[in-house]
Length: 513
Image (tube, rainbow, N blue to C red):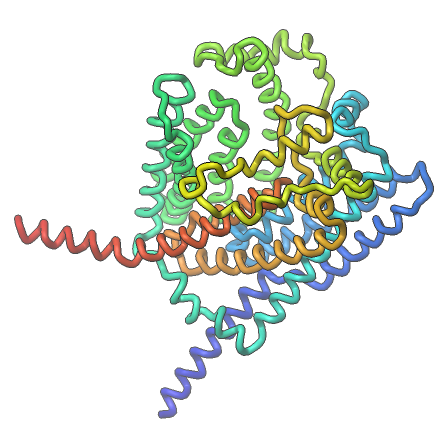
């Protein structure tokens, strides 16, 4: 009896320790929240500052904001490298990129860049201060809600719900080992890339359901990470070399499709595999520096290539002509381009023009209605054939700002919330986002710790959603939630029953022989 009691106590202690460790790794510190409050207060006070000081108010506040986000992200990853896959980490990375560094862009870039940015909406310095006040307040509410959520999860009743034993019912260890599941993802994703997407791009085939099939290509991203990480962990060089070769091939497909994301994401997943295998500040710095440098280098080139393709080839340049479009950027393109001196790479990081426009609209009695499709976003088009195009709200914003309906624009989640409902909506959306990202981060953490590789697809969606703080709430945040719930149920059932079915087939086949 003593042994049984001791074993029960040990199990409870392990569950409690596991839950506490997970919360400690993910929970924002009081220092981060206090620092966020001071920065938000700085911009609030700055809204009433005398004209002429706006640039310095914005610069000082944004530098502090960027340092705080970078420190918090690095601290979280240093505590446990599994947090590399959580939405909370990538939320900070995206906020740092777009609304920390990005919001400083219109202050310190050259005159040509500022002029082009103001072509969308001619903002003033005090409007940037207001935008930064909205963004930092949004972040403060977000972090405070996360803190309260995690404090609640430490209570006795809720701890049982999120304990390791309880989660085992909903997140089961994968019945496929990492290299098998990773190889399956890589084979399927690469097959889609090389036999469907590339032939469609170059005009060899014309599939009606191309976009549906193309979604399967993201499986290759999972495969790159899993196979390379397994190869590093087991010192198997062949499992490092051939995924890298396939990743470079996918980047070539991105070259022909004129897509930065397709060119860069395979390289990002390779880098994450190396960081996850052996974490160090040097590796993280090299990865971050290399990614930013590539992004800055490719942004003006891709913009030029797309413009030339649309102007001279009606958006349908042949596979033979595409390399010459890239070459023209380095020869005649820069000299003949009226925007040759525009710092396109930096400009792509900034949402100041769209954000200040959205805030200005609400403050002058013209609130937005970009949330109007929230009630139908989960209804499949098969059931609702006349369902409106949810993403058209981005085109409507461009049209409202400068009369161009052929371009899509986004103000970011915080500014869009203010546009739709002022400070009340800003606080409400920040709380909702914190609950979603907080619970999703716990989910992602558990998936990695349990080696539930069959659920890794959902982890990747969480990362992508967190990066979309520059996007639209209904399409980028609310839309994927229903899909993720259904995907989790389907993948769990697949993991539990498919290996048994395969084993049964193999036994029957062996018996016949």
